[in-house]
Length: 418
Length: 182
Image 1 (cartoon, one colour):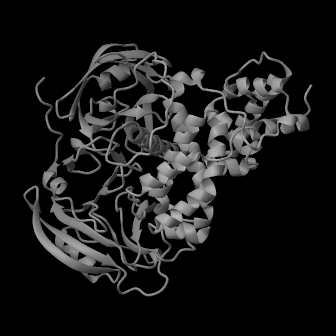
Image 2 (image 1 turned 180 degrees about the vertical axis):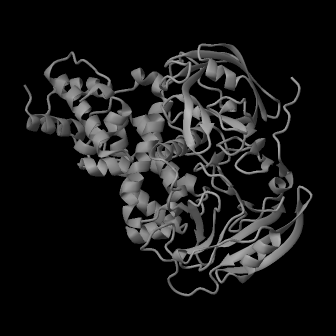
Image 3 (image 1 turned 90 degrees about the vertical axis):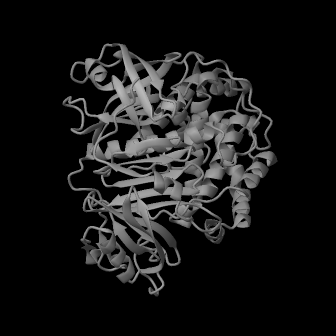
């Protein structure tokens, strides 16, 4: 018999065995890699409170989804050749062949179609997600996304044979489905990667089959590899094309906000619909400004707010609509401590910018000296504020190629004929 | 260290190099004990440190730098384990010729038994065990580092301890799913 004290002593002695110095080559590879690796920009978005209607389960689901997406991003970034510099690879032993093929990376991410009308879907659109599952982060997963509600139909998924997915339900029984119900689907992707067609071969879970079967459009609100697609965070929907590279979705389950950044942190895409302003740039308790909709009203907020200095304005069109590209600098007229930065009460360098109106759950802040390049436009009486930028040295100019691709659509495009 | 962190947050690569020098040995030691493989640990360390550099501007409290790095490293270990999980059976033994071994305190039989049993643990259970017994972190701090409830950390430590303790008492250890533990 081993006493508690003996076991602790033996365990510590055992753990003390082994190397305690990082190999020089590993450290050198890191320092070499950071020479060409940009840092991300300071986070300017901080969830400060959650909607009162958000249940604990919903919050957990949202957080779990966020974590899963983040992990998915890390996994994909780590597993692909991309623009981000990588450390020198170690000489690992040859792996044994896996028994099943993992989910093809081409279909990782979110896919959206018009709702099939089942009781478990959202009413207008339905989004399914392929990638690491929040239910089992170690296995590629599948799930039915729902706005502000827990994900359903959580399943593990592998490519059983080329072109055939095996999806196994690993969440509690639902409707007519049982744990471990297996479905097999033939999948195909359009040439531009925008359309995913799933054809049921068999599925023991009829609710899943009723939803999954059909053609889906790439939803760019989730982590993705670029290309054309749509974001359904807004009404109207926003269709656009991203440069082909890794993009990390950073959704917090909000409507009227879309946040993406590319894999190496050198490009951001953020879109807000009808954002609120702040009465006082340094005091959130002073309340929000319910800004009138439209380009001119938001520009007036930027021109009049003491936290902003408008440096430049340029007229352009977005999807045939008048828009203004505006460059602002923060904090020229603010001296001394202002608002908590990123929610940190001990750091009063924060300057309040705007907030999501619909979700009421987040606000955006920055620090003095930050410069933002924004595009503002008006669609059907609503303000669309966009920060779509790509790093160029120390500046972050608007990425016009993405902006020019934007289309505001009230209905999802029709899938191409097969 | 705070000054170095703040400078590195502003993009000072020399300051970051100094931080790497101060933390990389400890972090490598942690990774190699979790993953039980020097190559995987090296990859995890590199991945974590590059993530540290990229994400440094997002660190809100510079005084939490080391805990934050530890957290990123653990996540890198998770990723390495996940990436290589299909051939964990081939993981090489941890080298035992390191400079800090207290070999006189543990028998060869116990060492081999612990090596074998440790590999039967999930990566999450390994992490908690190593953070507690090697890094000396209390369960509350482990839970904070991993972003899990303290009860979950306690459960994982309990399970790992039970398996490893049984291993040095007998070769045959029944392995139960974590969820079935009390």
